[in-house]
Image (cartoon, rainbow, N blue to C red; front, side):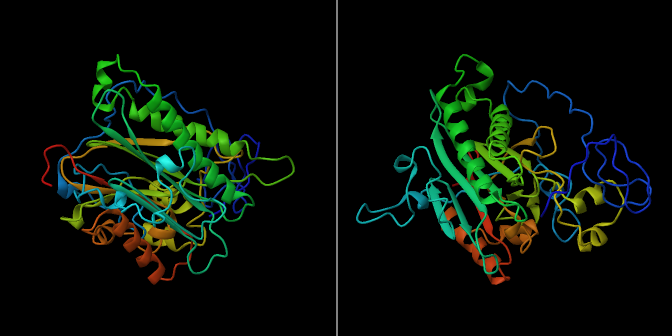
Length: 393
């Protein structure tokens, strides 16, 4: 994936047919060819989110579906299920003798990622009810992906928030491994700060410990963009990455993304009810969305995986995508880089990889599936078990 150049014109001129587009246009209306990026009108201010963070709630398992194309990218779908049960404790078990095979835990690495970002050919992390893994794969010489994962107690509540983030460094730009690591570190630091400074007086936020989770998703994305922008140096390419986060409190799931890293809702007991929760910021997805090409043609095009949004100093302006969902049944929230979904794009297939032994086993099974299919890219993922209150254990 590689962002195209940004022009400062009123609208880019199509190299194929010569027609000039409007500011912000990504594709030529005359012939459908891709256009250099231009800055469109400023995005509208988002509505106030200082309330219970639910923006989508559905209850029809049969309505959840994947995009018809081979990559599973498509219109965002809200799944009304949530939370694969599992006992949720597999990731925290250690007998205390010798080094913990899972690596540092949150209390061992209170300000970092829980692994060495300078040595990430393979790294794993687990907290109660969630796990993450990153791997260089079988083809790439280095791993430019990164992840962050933490579980934090909420003030004045018996609930906790799980925050996971996956960032995929743009391979065509130097310094993108640093960009992905900085973005992930910033998200975790921002989440920790928010949890340390809640608004307990707001009754609308009682269920989430005084934290507006939807607003936190926007804040984390903005902080990540600012941090990666700070890596830019005059006369050099701007380090860049894609971005996806997952925040889970009880039955509330909030997902945020920029680029083509994805989030999935997986229902192991009903794999066909699983779905993609995000829409790719990519040439193919946008070509399909505006009706220029059908899915098969778009995703077979050489431009298919060119990203149309990314996190960097020269990234297209505007807030991150943020959606919220409420779970009514057990399931697993997955966020991942394209190193996973390029190999296993369909939600039902990913749901069948969910392991009864808990999130660490699930994460390893998904990584193994990508490696067995060729491991052509860095692969990074975070899985979070979600079990709504009252759901069967």
